[in-house]
Length: 108
Image (spheres, rainbow, N blue to C red):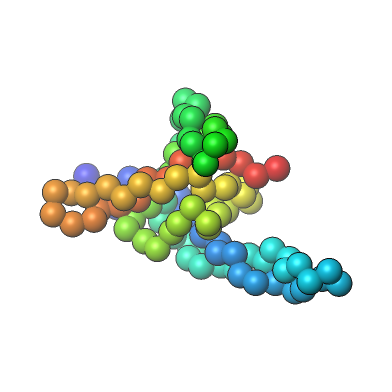
């Protein structure tokens, strides 16, 4: 069984892009598709504490992707649910980068 055969879902990775400027000079958040129909696997996980500066947030989901361009500033959409990426870890197979492991929480 290959790693790719375990990626049974598809998701969209979105990246924040500068949006319209309001009357006060603030740029609105705008999200553009960065990777579409990306093979992935998402699963609920036991709560994992992730440190973000001085704040501790709880990740409720774990996602696996191929070795793609994704950062903590991006977000994931899977089955019409939007997730915030809390942590991205690159996993290696001993010689090269193999896949990415993400910890997520749902956006409300």
